[in-house]
Length: 401
Image 1 (cartoon, helix red, strand yellow):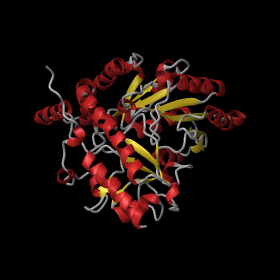
Image 2 (image 1 turned 180 degrees about the horizontal axis):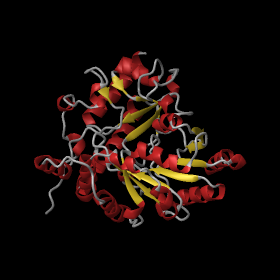
Image 3 (image 1 turned 45 degrees about the vertical axis):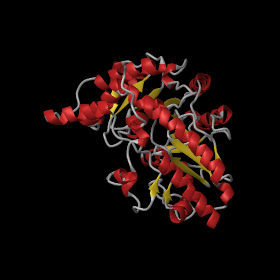
């Protein structure tokens, strides 16, 4: 009988978590409950810990080599997503998903051209793209959190006017809305992209984190996606942000573009990171299942806590990720904007209010683009006790305001 893996979210105590030296636990004073940046309050999965321990014991900390990561991802995709479309020869290691996105966009767009995003969306989409001298064009998601295909087509027409090149940076699953795009939605995206000559680049870092009741569909698995790209990683699914490594995967008709990727890009990911991600994909399935069950319970608990303690805050249970998008506009807290890094610290608004008065750190919605003002992103990948205390603190702060 297989050993049952306990819920990873209930393994570590608050004092143990406060010993951590990563960004989530060191950005704020010790009395703050940090539910912001996308780190999970979990221990390493045993297969990953073993792989790293073995690596260190051998002194095997040189440069990355081989295609084990891509092979592990291909096997994981076949088992989890019934998709056999990852060809090792159409993939390459990159430092992380965002740097991979930047390098792919350099291959398929020129300076000054536009990159379409579905706002509100992950803040680095804005900062990284603008830093590389491309321009953001927003195509807002619908009120239901799903893709608005009519709005998307309008953006594609605008971006390609006069024969300009353009790309569409698709967040699949979507951060922060938690939407899992369906096969029919993605097929429609592919058809629109082909019609308008727009290249699609899919950020699929949250692909392993689809909650029960929904199913992840890789963009490159749908008809018409042959000229697209996907960026994938074990980083979010197994909490490996500090172990840098990701994969850029090209569709069959994008292989020649990927082959132009500068060789030095593959020097960015670390050998240690590649080994950790490979172990997670190959052997970390049972741990991931335990995590997903815990996350599903947490999102249900969060819905109950918000309904009971913060009924004026709007909350739609996500289909994926461990991130909740809270509509705090009814609280009437004006928001002046996020800091330059897109983080939680703002001079006003709900995130600043909850940090100051509840000692709970959330991400400010204004960092996520148009439509984000008045919202917060909450990371519920923590224990039920921390999650409960955080919402109760927030409720007390609102009641006292």
